[in-house]
Length: 622
Image 1 (cartoon, rainbow, N blue to C red):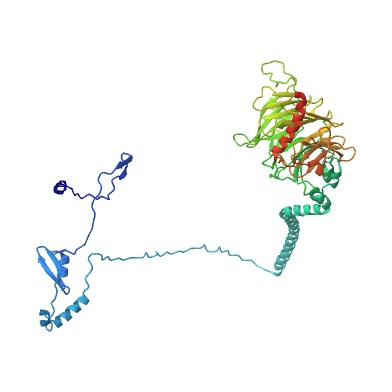
Image 2: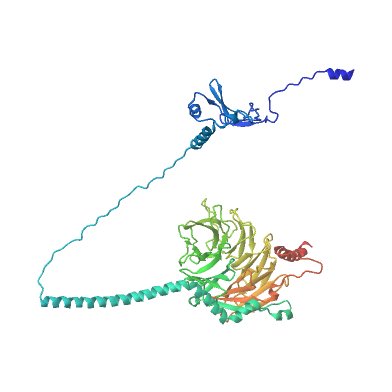
């Protein structure tokens, strides 16, 4: 029963004309309301078949025009009210067509001719096209010239006038030829000089290369020693080394001057700058800034003469063509090696705040917020000044003023000013930009900060005479070194007031510097013509090399390590710079124990120094 009931049940289904595939979520952007709105009306029409027919109104012109021609075979006109329709009429076989075939043959032939002659225009897709090109317009050009001027002249001629005219002409020709000869000779001289100058300018670079080749050929033995020689006798010495003299650099016009500053170029490691002046303040005769290359020891690459003696210089670490210089008269200047002029591109004046006493040290700093280059200077007037290169002038601002009591001199409230401390040396920390050290004539070293100028961070009672040099270690962030004319070289931990190491060199020390390849190696020069090299990891009590490197009656003044090559340069009081090669014992690296890997790079150098410091601190802790 249930099945029969289900069969009898009526199920109503509604059919509609909606397209099931039509999208229901269409949206369109409304430019009026400025957002997307849903489209409610969707087109559901689906075209399954379409056919275009041919219908003409019988009263139209096209219908009349077509009726004039005979309809095609098999087509008959069906007359409907207002409409002319073409239909096909089949012809039966053997019917009337055969009976009337013979009679209508001429008609059919004539109708065929008409069909061929009359061509019916396609009224649906017929189009007629035509084109026309543009003709270039004709132009006429003409010009008119002025007629040449005409002059009418007349005169009487005789034999004497003709003779005088010829004689005068010959005299004029002689005078003109003499003038031409003199001008040609002058032009020839001028042209020769001009050509020589142009040729010299063209071959200047080539001549420089050839000059270097000639020098290297004449000094080939020194070049071979520089590149290949290693002192084999170091194997038989007890950890001691030697210095091999290489090239000697000297400029003939600078023999009466003293080498007061040395600095290597970080980008071109064979190029170094030499500052020349005088430490005898009673005999100041100007100075010189020279640039020498290891490729040519015979003549400087650049020469700059100065009215005042140079006491310090520093080459920019990134922009190697900028050189900051400090003078005896208190000025600071910046030279640009790209410029061909001999004068500095920047120089301080009294209006821009120049020092009133000799400038003893200059150091380049990182650029400021506006990407302006900066450097700092220290002078005997007690001021540490920052100089900013702005457009075409130097802008100065005081970082700190040194005083003997340990606080910067103020005096703005009318109180008595403390005694000014005279700065003699300066160096900035390698990792901490704002931290720097200042050495003074009183023998004290001040640790200062650029961000805190009201008081010194620390004061070290370092030496009994002026501090000639103070320098931070290249690797260890806590260690710095100082030297003085009191014969001592001291190594400090800036967190401790007392020196970690003290070395007595038995003679006034002119300069000291750290090796760029080791945290424990440093070198110093003394006025008794000796170069002293120390390696604290080998010997903590005395140097591993003490060698006389110059002739008698000569004082050494400065020393610098090359950034990459195992050589040092030393300057003396006769304007000469001597280069020396370090033997293998003076540049040893620590050996690793079996089964133990040593860290590489700066970490290893920091660990070397930390071991030395730990050995010194252990007895104090006990």
